[in-house]
Length: 307
Image 1: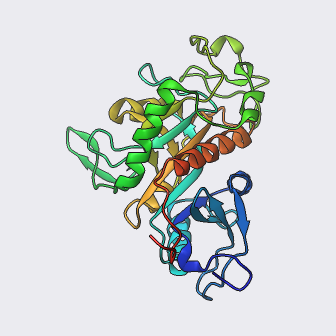
Image 2: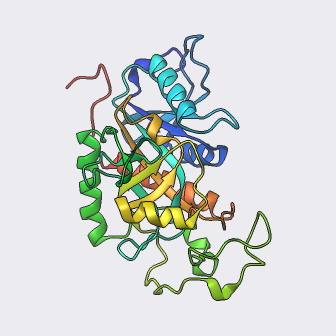
């Protein structure tokens, strides 16, 4: 414990990485208690928000402004580990683009959590592979799976959520179904960037009304690469090939370098109709799930305390 009463760097056990300022804001809001940040080496350029959730000390860092993607995420994670060397695992928490299908009714505001699926560790780099004559593009390589302690906590939450709604923030109910529009894959966005005020409402895909407005938690495969997915035709093709639930831009840079779980709130449908309306909601949903997951972990005694 430092002289100001905050934990030393070696007393932090969970890393939390965000890509956007909105994600950092809600991540900090999830902390039960805030601490002063411990000293860090000159080689670590990250700026940290630190605190506690349950009995676990958390170090939160955000990617540099404007620098997104796998390389930036890898650099932030490496520098975080140089300062907080006792981290047991890292959470990558934030927004992502959904890949809805008949099998997985992914909607805006839902949460997707990486889980080993179909021979993959939970995350697939969908631009890494090889082209074979007569067989098309095939993905190669394997990204690591989340550590067992997190998979156990996920199993606990799955069981809990069968009986009770997720303990997500109450204000997540403020945006209703009237703002959730999934357009037909072949229909491109009209009117440039921004909201879909000029898009044809007849091209909205008709889906059953949900009985609950609470976000649904989906577990499965997340697709990651250094490009933004904005093509619904390509989205659906990759979804059908691999059972992908969402697309994002950072996780592939983390999964082989450290024990990591990826949590994404769905803010768009990975198509040309992208806009930022749902980003704050989706960021809050993913952060709230991360907090609930941390509360599901075993309650360990603080370092140095009697066993």
